[in-house]
Length: 446
Image (cartoon, rainbow, N blue to C red; front, top):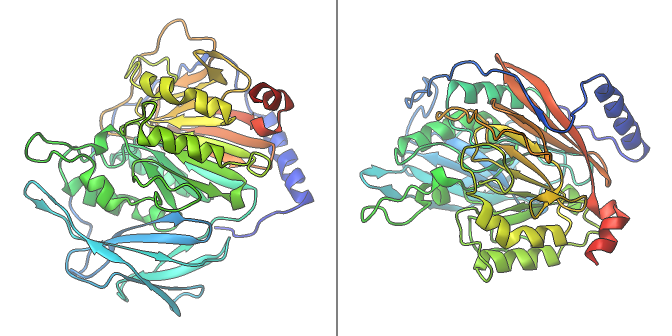
């Protein structure tokens, strides 16, 4: 993957080049329902390990990384046997002059006992730099990642409801085929659904990507995994395996189910909201969100985006209304802070709404996008309300993934790529203009 970054005047040339390339594509029109017919569902992947996985009990597996603050990275991995929670790293392959020691935990779920879950925070790290690392001082596996850039442009991949089917494999191949800086996942990761070995197989499935770029995730309904009496605590596996930076940043949330972080040196602020944590007015999440948004300086932060699991706007018949209570509690806060876009999962289809507030189009409100189409085993949600709402710009029941490139302080390009017989096809795109750059919205909110 290329590490070079265009700066200064070349950013304008990059923007012009993107505009020229997109001019040859079909325009993303309002109120489009795609006629595309999805092929038959594909099988769930097996749980067993591959021949090269976990060669012995101390071999690191299920490695993934996540951002911590402006210049650090959390590395998480699992070993079957006891091993040191140490990460050794450097900028040259095979040489690891730096190291950090972290923590080891385990959890039990009914009759299942997890492996040793290690995590260590490494840094400070330089931006746009490739680091090589190994876990638990094990020489058998070397990993590498590239740190995100500290300036714009900045590239996100956004995909929800990933699961672990053959369609998931296809989606992951499409994601890996083009460069990006950070992956955002709005819930429903493994679809373990109480079967804990599925968390392990999921960790092995995503490791090639999740060990090389930061994966920032929030929870979905399939992460709850409560069992009356036997396992009354929700999110046991999720919180143990996917620790996010809820204790970092200017406004730490103190809860792994919701948090925020900055990207591109503060040019982008990302809200990872918890659809399954209390979000009512006066709740801990609601009060944290109020504080977090109040701390964002839109003179410095060009874009603010949010992720939730249950969509706030959707014309699909699946899960209708499940995000309404959260929207009612938090929508005014997001509009008041001029949040630019909200991305959701849960509904197993793609849909993009125009800027909306209170159920109506509003030029100073966020764009709403549902991307719950990563490849889950439950299949697609193919039934939409008819007629299509005017605010629903494009909808299609297909697997795929999205990319959000924040090109500069005023423009971001959103593009959704359909999984079309194993080929990624650009099916929808739109330019999103920063609300912070819109004088009318500044006056409106003041």
